[in-house]
Image (tube, rainbow, N blue to C red; front, side, top):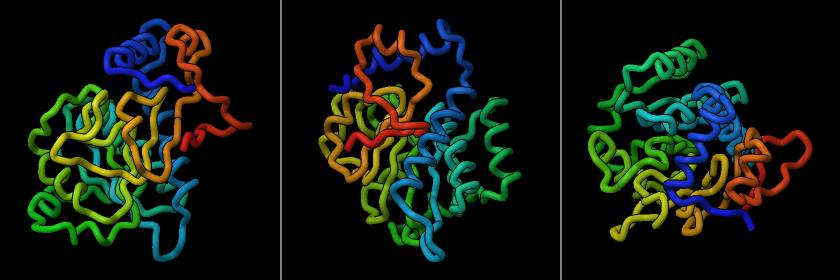
Length: 235
């Protein structure tokens, strides 16, 4: 039985990866984002009429994973577009965004989403990648994410959430008033407690970079990846 991490355990696992095992932030971000793109490609096949993807990115590591995911989706033949309402002044994220732009991935003007009056603006997309808020998020949702999350709550377009659905409490799951209901969840490193409340169609684990000693330290009991696969389906 795979262990689901609480918030402090998730933070400590990341801290150990950085400090004890000497992974860099951009190294883990590349591995995580690539894993997310692979999971999406496994579940949502390409066709001439269904390859347009909206990737919604936040200002933290979750958003960085989204930027990497967008770049790999482009390489896989999808047509991603990026919505990035709060861009940090950070060299790492600037590089990741630059790589997307140089791969001809459009970055939307914020107003086109923020001034939308209803969810029909999202209907042109086949999939929406939710990379807005990660496991360090604590409710409630604040600006500038209130409007986009409200749109995501209402849309019928399949949502793929990276690590946790944005707006969910990392341990308790969706807020009482209702939250995003993603069709896909891609847990990174190990699932978080809120994943037990996930009722969607696809649940993948991405994180084949996890050192065995660290897995044993936290008694994670992760499943065995198959062959050279970077993701494994949990549900």
